Length: 208
Image 1 (cartoon, rainbow, N blue to C red):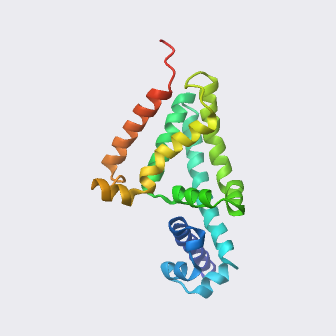
Image 2 (image 1 turned 90 degrees about the vertical axis):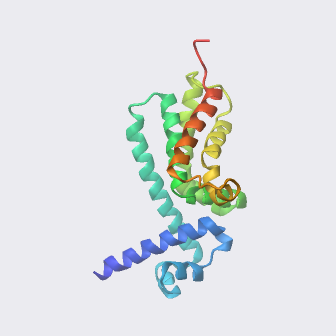
Image 3 (image 1 turned 60 degrees about the horizontal axis):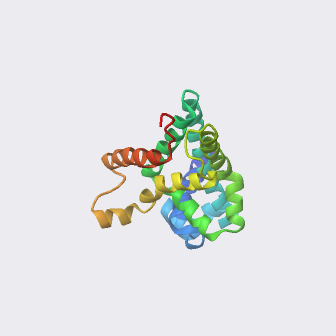
């Protein structure tokens, strides 16, 4: 029973820390606030994690585990799809994930702006396979003449950025337009518009 309790406490701390690091960035987050938000004492956090950096890495590993689970589900789906439909499905899944919570986008934005060793660690240990999987689908579509031959990295950033931006700044969108972009009806409408507008411009019509 004690072991189970300690494991649950550690996982809960990581979950809270991930949300805090995503929202405030590494510099803005502090162990005292994370402890308070998690409902534990600071000594409890220090029992599990020897430093703020160790806590950050554990939180990022938890994010990575979630991404791995999503990627495995995607791979099962991809086996039945054409390359172009794989790309569309990847974009839709990214939209749905972003609409459920901005953690991934906030982490990428925060560390992507800061740069440096933490970003390199994050890419190496958490994000590399995610970007590579997405880029591979994009480049396959280009190679097979399914979408226009723009640079793969440019296509990747366009598709992913357009998919997540409004959800990453949902408080701004809500304030300006008076509606929550994360409401299901808005998510559904956005997915339809995203696929229509972006892929109408990217897809090569071989019948023309």
